[in-house]
Length: 481
Picture 1 (cartoon, rainbow, N blue to C red):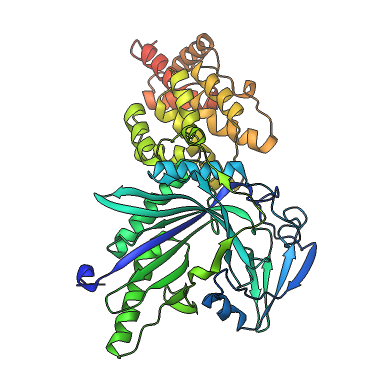
Picture 2: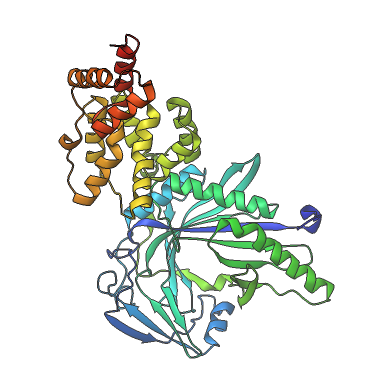
């Protein structure tokens, strides 16, 4: 949007960042993996809202009930138990998931609650078989500094992810239970964000913090951003389920334009929850939920988080800082440093770079992350190489047993045959190579250096080191045998 003064507009933006934790489910021991196989069983259910402890009903729950639908749930025994179908009480909390959220709370300087409890948040769109989502407040009042601006973090919450929506008809909605109960973090900012572009920056920064721990999932469906915004004389709107943070500015701009257009027409702007359309506009989904949707979980005890437990949580190096350090300490390009981090090879790289001194740091990084990509792209094959095999290859290269020219062939041979054969690619002995080069020069007197080099490399393919061959040719070429 051009020529818009967002301050004059009274724009306020807050974000809710949701990301799945890379653990088993939160309150059972089922795996948090998705499956596309035919379901092992189906369950049908109708949900109804309940009255809160204060005698109130939640408006969002009432709205969902008014649709008059029922749900069909698809289940698989490999990732679903009685808890997902609401036929057994929850087990104790997943400690790995709790520690992941405690770590994030420390990283964003939040106040961690020493005493907290599991709450039930009423959800009647059928995405939860029980009609509620279990949620736990872990941290409050954190903050992050982004480009000089202090962005407050209101809450850090550990919660269950919802079931996965498969289909919807006029009469029913179909969900798959594989995702239900997956451990998930929710980070909610205060409405401190001032512009659409800053909203994208904040989402990106928080995503980088989450990724820095190595404890959160990545990929489509594992990350969702909700946007809360309001403008002067408008209404608070929650925009649900933004998958790609690059779309955040345009989504916000479209909502601002929608509200301004309604104002010009003299229409009242109603608060509510809206879903994002493929064209980045939005469609009304339901009313904003009220406080009456949340009540205590009676099947689980109070959760105690001791100071000793908090002190044991270590803060990892941020990806941004790690990338800058790799570039500085090891003279890597920004692209190589980020590739090592993205492929979770940065620790392995540092180990090899400090151990194998005859190889350049750039070459080691190239072998770890770039060569497997090249092989995958060129040969349409999964070029996965385990750490032990990588070290065998790099160790042999460092000691001069193989040539760097043979690396692609060695790795391709390994991924095809699942066996590492370094002897097949062993370089020719230097003395034997020197004899061969002398013979080639004698037989091809007058040939320029480049032509002689071509003959040698063609004859021995990847069994000679190009630098060694070049030095030997120069040694005898200057004397012209």
